[in-house]
Length: 295
Image (cartoon, one colour):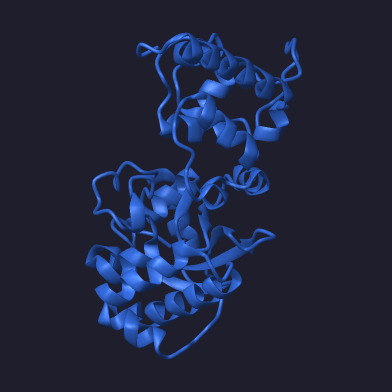
């Protein structure tokens, strides 16, 4: 276990016990799994948690035994999602693993209710983002439609920040729509900033950085438009399928800090057929596409 001492060993043993306790309370139906006729325990099996978290069964077994290597921050986040941990439970898991708790834990931890809804949306692209447009989790169809958003860190994790600082981020929309999208993103950011606490440093730092980096952002911000993005009809440019017209629907969490987005084909277009092709193509053809593609 990376040379940890007796205190670390005791903490890892507690980590294993905590994982077992959370696994036992989750019912298969809670995570979209069939109960099955031969299930001897009401909770999840170890191999099921491993599958949901994207880990090997052997590795997860080692974690529950309090052995093995120190889990990474990415693995902790994956386990928290798989086990539907609350924000407090997720932070406790970071503590037991000896990893720093994310500073903005309330925004980076996916709301369990949002995650449950996302799991039920298997036939349409869907993802959960923060109010600052940081993607927290995507289903496979969202990755196929919009690109994998899991690799961005720091301010670049926010699509709004990338929109005004990285030209590649704009490839998702036709150039003719860029001005409209810029105005919509800035108006949404102003609304999100107003909803947050007046002393919130995350949003203030982001707005300040965008003012310094983008004259376009500064000009749009000076217009003082304010409006949350709720239900949009928009045109997306897919690298293989071309132009796709979609309806983007939004469900807000109670505190407004997270949003579940799901995408449906726009009525009166050929997008329904393109969505069927999207499911066939999956993520294979966009694996090498430029980063920054997003909603």
